[in-house]
Image (tube, rainbow, N blue to C red):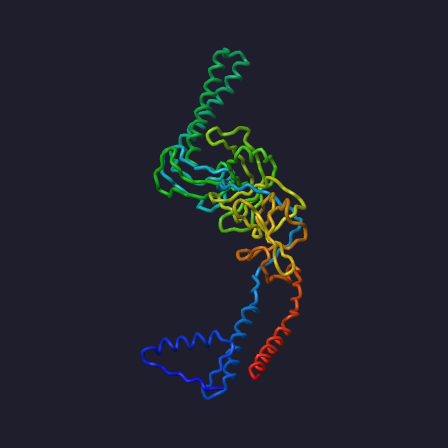
Length: 409
């Protein structure tokens, strides 16, 4: 074979070089002998092209990592949520009943008191003295009445004289009682068992009538008052159990419906419902904010899946059902919702495995890798063996060998 000779002119060098590259890329075999074996160069270039084509054909589909959950029967309940504040059974501001100077304070904030105990005392020397005077005067009038009765029995005085003594005694007793009231008003007593939450006075302070001195709270029981829409209030009855959740607390506190108002507030179209909390749960504080969860409906043995498995698009709800090593998107019809699950009325059968996490990159036919297979009892299918893999390689080698033989010929 004649050797190929190339003459490069400076003016057309670039054009010729470009043409040479194009011919090398397009031709199956170009026998250019640059002092070596042209067949070797052609074979090497063919191998590179074959390898690139094979990589494209054998590119693997990367499965999407997901977690699965079982569609199974369970009790599911629908809730209505409201919010309110914790109120004590009773809370009063104790005020002064008379003018005076504080003589003694017997209890501090946080102290528990019994009904009738004296919380504070005003200076009452004058009231004590007056009460004692009226007490003695009443006793004197009583003695005079008794002497008059003896004289009347002996008919030494008239009935009118005795009646006058009787009236004088009644008047003295009234004056004594009035002095006793004035003395009692200098004492501030607890009207019920409770805890002092505020002390607003100090000894020596001058107070006036109706001036707040203490705040007393009865914590047993606690109450929560909420306003419910009329449609929800119809589903609530006295004695129903509800749950309260305080801020920064996860465990719910049980309460019962104490009473449902018989009327609807015309300005808000709501019904006042009072809830009763027994004891003094540590999670609840008077005045604290609480969320109220009321059960409005319950279905037992309802087919349900985790709420996270539900996909909502364009007003339609669907789930991805795992089948072998891929998934299928299935439209579903839902029922009740609770905190973690949703009832499935149609679209999925009991025992189906649905994707509960990782739906973002899925579509029908997507390959999946189950991350929680052991937890849910998922058995991954065996990967199918490729019947063409080895044969394809042999064909490639044969093809190359035949090409080399053809070149030799």
